[in-house]
Image (tube, rainbow, N blue to C red; front, side, top):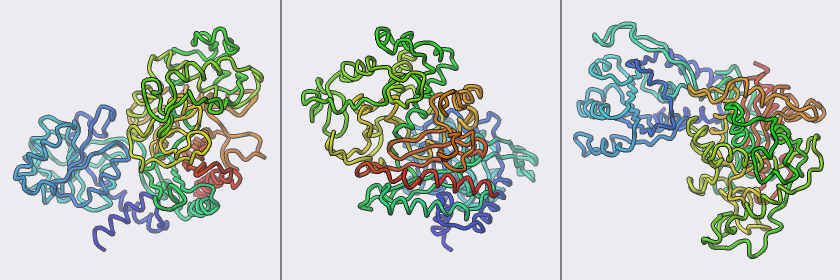
Length: 597
């Protein structure tokens, strides 16, 4: 079997292609053998696993390594990696041009097979780079080549295997998806003597096969059938499902296409409009941080934080009531229905600066002058009872921004997404990504009169400029998995503590006497006739759903993070995803597969 086919099979297994349990067991056995025989050297400064990802610009350099595509695809799950290969510099006798091209990177991960380590050009290049940058050398093959690095102080990760599977293991060791503890079995040089080697712990998600978490691949195959059913019924044109069990991503698969024209297949890296997942993935973590810092008190009234609210009906409402959807706010204000011709323009200008969609700009201060006063003065009708309202998270965004002095979109990037290694998550994705990577949401025929692709579907959030507390966040499934794994870990991920366990427990536990809700988070419904979020979900389950056809559910009882992303509102809104119970049925397949182990 040639290298390309082997590589494709390995990539396939990490992307949940059709493999059976026996194949996966064999692959897991090989992967574990590689991990158990991989040695980490020169790690006195605990460089590996890499920390502080928000401070790093990372390049991956192949010096004749055949499996760089596989290697880099795994690294890109943890952080943004830019790939370079010495093959691109064939006429460069010293690799000076390659070194010059690395000037903007502070961390360089070099993959080199042992036969290339005997090439003085390569050793000189690595030595030169290591003088000014953080270098990690990954060495594949003969142990004897280790002594060629006697003068090096940079970390070296050595495996005797130069194979596609080793190319999936070593990147995960670099980022802490797996831990290492093997020591050298023989003395190779005075520096690299018997017993030399460093141990590391697992601190981030591992990407592996279901069998690694005690789950049989065959028991997950029904997910394929349910996804196919949803697409054939036109419940949604495409779907991405991710399953993480015990900190291991054991299933991640894309189905269908961006649209029903079948021209652009869904990919694992696709970016979706998360809709109301914004509430628990952006706004609620911000509130958790402010409560933990004692800058926000849940039992203080809105007016204490928002001066304009002091003469409004919402002045005396407590923050806790807002987070529980018990403030009495009306569910929704259809702001777009009140738009006048003078409120928008097809061209941007100083008078119309706020982009709502392609060729649609709303007038300056529209949120401040029109939307916010409407919310502040909306009637309080149902205080004390549970009424789900988007207004709650508009309010929480305003409170958070007044306390921090930082716009919500910037705050979550700097405090959560960048440090966690989340590359796609954020508001206003069209400012950062090409259209092709963003799944189209709706063919808007009634408000913006255009295809919504990378502009938030929610009309109110769009009129607010695309950044809101209740909607506007976009992300890939992998990014969503990272932040919810952090919550499942009780606030810790990648060697950093983002929250105390007490804060995570408080917000995600049932906190209402009149509903199933936590603070910001939706939860398992004790009314078993509702089978919410699914028939088999445990009472500990928390998460949220999104109008565009998304959900994330964390089940601590099973060590589970389940993510479902779709664009069920394309080309226009349909309720089939809900009536066919697609999201809950997939969750039940996952739960039963875990319970059968």
